[in-house]
Image (cartoon, rainbow, N blue to C red):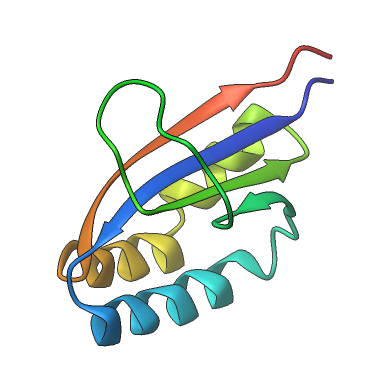
Length: 96
């Protein structure tokens, strides 16, 4: 079964509020145990809207990534993110 990847690109406007979101999102993620493929670090924006932080999480499947994103715990964390910055999030199915 192909893996599922949750990819986020975020620009932070309130570091304190973002820290609260990051903690809540991390707590929500614990029971899903995704693998962190990439997180922040060096990047180069080649096209499109630029963001300052980037993250890629690998889940067991597309549906598992979506189940995490739609979970009540993550939806509560997402409310905190709305006050901390802007971003783009997508779920992508792996190739194998």
